[in-house]
Image (tube, rainbow, N blue to C red; front, side):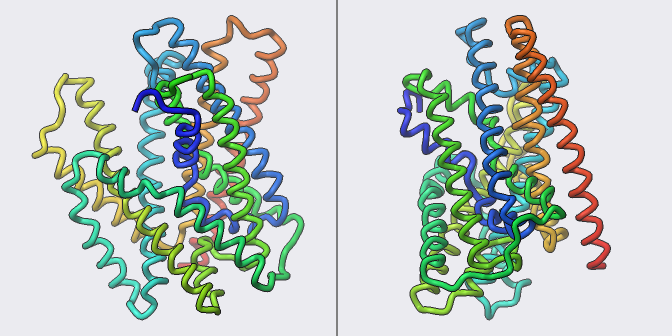
Length: 397
């Protein structure tokens, strides 16, 4: 709703960014050692900076046309024309589709941990059957209400990690630096920092927009602390043997009744949150296609068309998720690589293009160098992740 306070915007920002990747943050430490902590800080700070670039672009375009607050896609179109628009659309489709795949895999793995006596195949069949009726949902209202306790789920995970660190023995197989895992770790961290598309509407809804930028920076600082607690705590507990999902390590390590109860609560709450997230992703994917159709024809899909599209999208994500079940870390890394485009590279490009006439020569040159270095890093990380995936794929055949 319009007129949100700084506190409400702060929590909206946390919910916008922090989600399923929190479950894998300790895995980034397992892959790259303690080096993961400064890398996490640097990437989070960079994410806050590029988010600020998006807001500055919003303010520039809003000043030119106060009656038409720009969306992320409009900012892209104003900066790069049709190319920017389609880059944003394709990147958004990839992000939501791949995120849905990740959520499905995590749901199945968590339910399997909750029901260890049930075979994995039946877990998948049961979850699919339970989720099928969600295809009849036509809007976000019910799903938003059901998943409104997302922050509570996140805080519960962090509380259990802190409790376990204080109560349990720590793993000993930890290293300062593991260079071979740095690229994969960076990709997963970046997946937890994707969400810049949601910044313009949050800014426009604030009662006092001048408070948005300090609120955003505060939110990114808290996000870093949340990710750091999950990463450091999980690494202390499980060391280099940590699994992709911390819930799997929690379930295996829990010995006391209290610890098992906490782990069950974590598994149940985060699974329910993700269960609500999948149909939201399906709705978003169909709405993106519908918006393009409406832009072209001036009409929207009838329910007779929209429902089969939702079912087909839902079924497609399930089929793909089953096909890549053993490769969750690489699917998450793909979200991170996509995040480098939509939440890092494009915001820098938009800012440089829209402010090229007002930026000083030194500032423009410095940001241009930063853009080139970021592009080079994107290519290197992408190549390293693909090589890592191919090596694992060849080893599992």
